[in-house]
Image: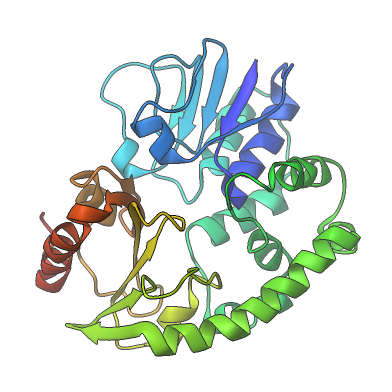
Length: 299
């Protein structure tokens, strides 16, 4: 059996739980949701998908994204939960294959994936170990696969305090802290507010900066949702769009996952993303922004 999941903190924790409960006999297959949606990922019989859209080829599937809600029968579990890891945890506790060993890890995974954060956590993530660790996980052309696998093994076997002392983890955490300082400047330079929506466009930059994705809600408290636009790589053939409800000013009524499903993406009610061909991106973004500006509950 093979674990197939995405490279974010929720996906990594899903892998931790699946290693504890299933007979995994090969390396984790790391993929992004869009690769499932366009049929690029090679999903095989026996695969266990977690935190990803459903594939009929898999043998078990676990997810919590509203845009991925299944219509037919499948093996596994789906629920509108704070994290996919929570869905996996509940499923295997029901089968008495997991006790309460990972309660603290799942608690923090729920907080991080659901963005259930306060101002202090957003402004000073370095004070919150699990949150800081989660920010070291990013996908830049799958270069970090060894690091993701390392975190899975660490979280299975040791404490968060011990993990943060690892030289590689510590180096990455320090880099995150430095990047967040720079990211604040980039947000202030490249963000405009329209109809209480913060729109950050990094397409004028050679490389889109990374940083604390929740920081925009602290910097622009009047915004009810954020839109981030950037190119996917130097070829500039694809435009990546990320949209989220403000975690502090909770007055956005648009279901983001359902909205982005129209454009080949997906996500939660409160956050999601999609990839657009560059030649049609401006038109699609205009349509998406108009829906956000209207801020209606029903799409």
